[in-house]
Amino acid sequence: MYRKVLSYIKDNNLIKPNDKILIALSGGPDSICLLNVLFELREELNISIAAAHLNHLLRGEDAFEDERYVINTCNDMGIKCFVKRVDINAYSKESKLSSEMAGRNARYDFFDEILEKEGFNKIATAHNANDQAETVLFRLMRGTGLEGLGGIRASRDDKIIRPILCLSREEVENYVKLKNLNPRIDKTNFEKIYNRNKIRLDILPYMKENFNEDIVQTLNRMSTLLQKDNEFLEKLSAGLYNKYCMECNDYFIIKKEIFKEEESLVNRVLRHALTRYSKSNYDFEVKHIYEISCLAQKYSGKLVHLPNGVCAENVYGDIYIKTKTKKSDINSKKEEIILGKDNIYINTVEFHKYVIQFSIINGYNENSINLKQGDFVKYFDFDKINNNISIRNRKNGDKIIPLGMSGSKKLKDIFIDMKIPKNERECIPILCFDERIAWVIGIRISEEYKLTSKSTNILKVVVQRKEY
Image (cartoon, rainbow, N blue to C red):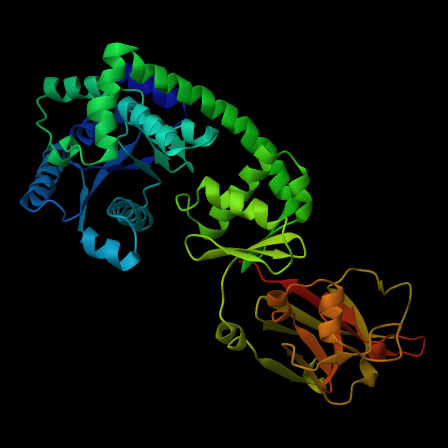
């Protein structure tokens, strides 16, 4: 069996020499098997291991017995063990999550905390081949796509690994029995009030007896094949994501042109945008993807509410993925930075998510100054400025004399003409000279401060987005 696990680890590139692996140790047969297998293989793999146990405080004295068993087992093996207690019922109510999801979040928060503090680089969990088969059937009955039918992956994010996913539950139980490990048994695993337990205790045995004696391995082979197909489609959709999606700090934009592509790929892009924005892989279902697709066919300003505090809005055909904000949140961001003209030489300031750099160039030379460097590099006649230079948010009634025009125009009308979303308008910096608008950054510059052949001192302004 060690050879089987070792081969699986190498085939899936799960472990590298010098890895520091934290084993998620519940005390049950699967995790005890995983602990002992990696302990036996640690020298051959050239790794170091430790264990982490989260007491969910859900099963009374049994939970504390599990905790003591884990600690004693690790002490006997000379392995460091990290233990934490979390009241999952209280955490579930506070976070408004199911007990299962709350438990999962608490566990991985605990594991990540240990990784960061103790220098481990991987988390090993004890999923086995039967878990894979149960997961595939569970997702099939709930309704899922190709990715869902792929089941549990051997690794995720090069951090979470499942080294014994190749072993059946029967192999695991035979191993712990042979090694006389006496693992803890969670009695709730035999209660048929849970759907997953019904699959484990009723459906899979029925399928094995009446249809396919090798059903667990058959479902595992299917999931492996579907994972490969899914990887191919993921590569295709990644190309579309890079082409049509733009990630901003506060929101994501999905360009309307994407909806001309193949629906199966578009759906993947939408799901990826949602999970990437919300940093959650578990909140969004097929119906939410469908809602966004329908939203793209509706009028601008239409909005749908999604799980995890996320919403999607149609903005002139583009889809904006964002967190719904209150007006009070927007108003709280309003501020103004005022700089004296005499102090502007080689000066850099930060305004919200932008870095704005000022510099002075002596003498206007068409050969040395490129006026077409882009929307975020502009030049102005410095001598036309009397006193102050300021950067601020827009105000009601703001006007500018756009370059090439003689009359002023309201910023509101410019934004509407350019189809700039309302939520973006509040975040666009306004550069003013003596309280007159010189540049709506990235949008329009003013006729009043343009360079001429008579300009002698030039103010160069370069704007960059801050890196996060």
